[in-house]
Image (cartoon, rainbow, N blue to C red; front, side, top):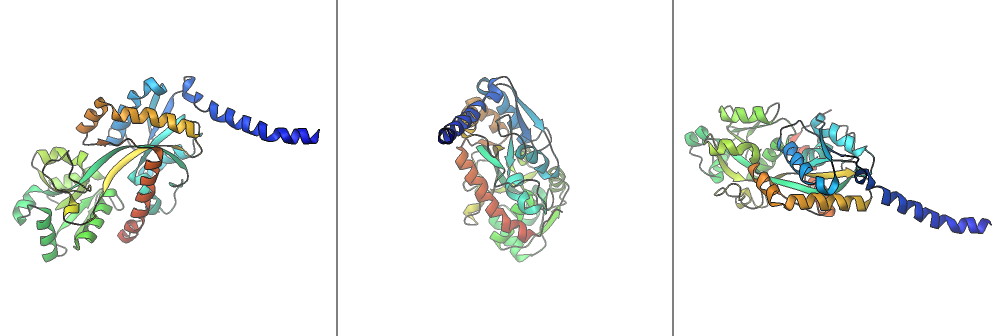
Length: 328
């Protein structure tokens, strides 16, 4: 009798596991809405793209409700995803800050960016662009990135650049540029990307490295001059502007974000989410909408997005350390 019970245990275990995995997709199949957590305030590019996709995947997944949970540089919203039930009912946005920079910037993190999430797909890539105040460019005779580097080398410390704060993506991109170009420029941190952009427009700082979505309108208006994009190749979204890698070999800094679920979410749930969201990203309507935001849709496999986040975390660790930025 004892032998029979023991022999049944593996069978029962497999049956229970299969039942648990098979039940997981029912979170949306039975009408339960999916929560899509955006760890930033409403209205920004991450929020707008999340809402556009949430609407487009409804035929495949049912109701997807976007919830904004800003705070602590994105850590509050990301932690909600990390600690949610791994059944597909809660997913979230993973961005450069939350999953590549914050792990090294914050002294205490509420989640492990490398272990507490299951990647679903990358959503977008937005090129960053080095922009200089148009009046400053004219006054100093700076027409190209090479001109900027040459001036900075001849006049160390005379140029300055702004960012949305110590440890922000713009700050760290600026530090990487300084190191790659062999120049010194003074960093001026502001309380957010918008104040930094206003300071550039007012001529209070000389240049910024900002994402193209935020800078595009002022580039078109002629208020700021784009010298280079920070993607590996020139961006079709900004014709005629070269890649920084043409001047600084190997330089590449993109803004990206994608979708993650809590670690432990069954693979078949991840696969179903991936199929729905990548189909939505490939739709012509999505590509047109994202192009208006200067964002390039990038549908990937879960493995590809996971590898991207791993590479980016490794790349930003020494950059954050060199910058001296820290949040207690």
